[in-house]
Length: 40
Image 1: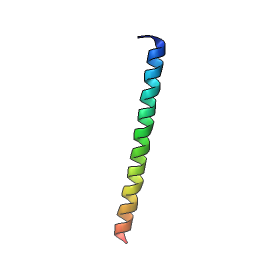
Image 2: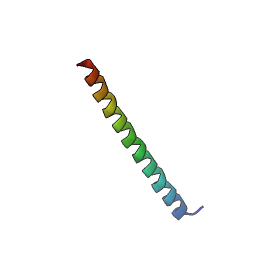
Image 3: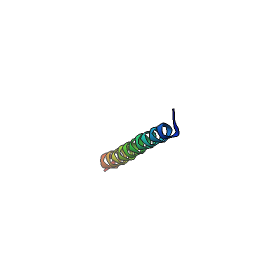
Image 4: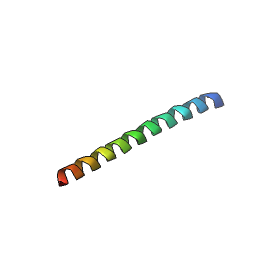
């Protein structure tokens, strides 16, 4: 395994983490909207 391989892997991992965080943020926003919507 070379440094180049490791760098590529790190970039892929970073992309996956960013997507996961974006999904969690969307899910949280949806949950808050739903909770406040039901409270009315």
